[in-house]
Image (cartoon, rainbow, N blue to C red):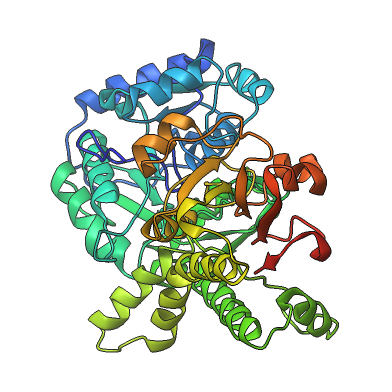
Length: 476
């Protein structure tokens, strides 16, 4: 994923660019006048104040799963800039296409009528006085936080800032990152001082790619600011577009910590049921049957086993454990959950191979079909997909593996995962079929057509509960 120097990688959640239309009439005049004012304004002005809510001119930095819906929502309130370094991303949005699938073509068409301007030119950011950063915060090869996309975005914003501006970060970070890591970059690039010349806020994104129920507007937004006045302004900004309301945290560090534990909690809950699945497999018990029985108790949490990946659950816990170690604490439970979830692909592959051997199949000559590659259902996002652990282990057994995923972009699958997708798997060809991702497109095929991909005696391994129990040979 490209980063910010010409590579701040797309969104806090993936391909980022923004639906843009050149601001017209009064909107265009406001943006144009603002830019002229900024170009002539000295870097420090005594007695500078925060702008009023009605005078905010937001710019959303990064136009992916997080930034695009936000830019469109803010564009409905007044002049807004949607900025992404990717010329291709901005171009596709201007053409009315969103490859993330988060915004429909009709909605994009509507957005073009708003005072929302899309651009890939950093100099255009000078027209704004409120910058909202929605770039990704991944981990590196050693599972350490990689803030380079966010810090790169801070440099771009810092070069555009003027006295009186507000900067809000939505990207997931560890507690303290906004003030300890981002602010120094903003100060250095702008020549301004925090809480004297500019202010910052933190309002973590809660985007769930592919989820058509929990959208930006109907999910409560946590807000915070570097001063009480800044916190008030950040909260008021989001209250304009969040119908579910806001929760004002007492400090930026509290808001950062709240975000990073949301997915850590989910990761640990999934790790628990993944371990239960391993235990129940040894005990020859059906995990789903056990979970359904336990679920009849009012306070039993309805988590299910599966392959864990994506830009949030598989990444965010490492931001917290990094900060914990920095503070002198070795986080045992969190890391144990991460290790277990990271191993699930390997365990699932080994379980299939053992079942094939036990049934007398020629494993060396077997062909396997894996249905699904994205990190979750009904979403084209391939980042950190847990299916890769499964594929890599199957290939270590020298198995011939095909992958089919109608949601994934074939070029992205090849460049990001090294996987050549099969567009139309043949029926009756495979010795085993693995249901890895529960796309609606797979559910629509129905049990009989899903089974038909395999030979008459093929092993069917259902990781996602796509089939009735009696129609699969193995279930997670």
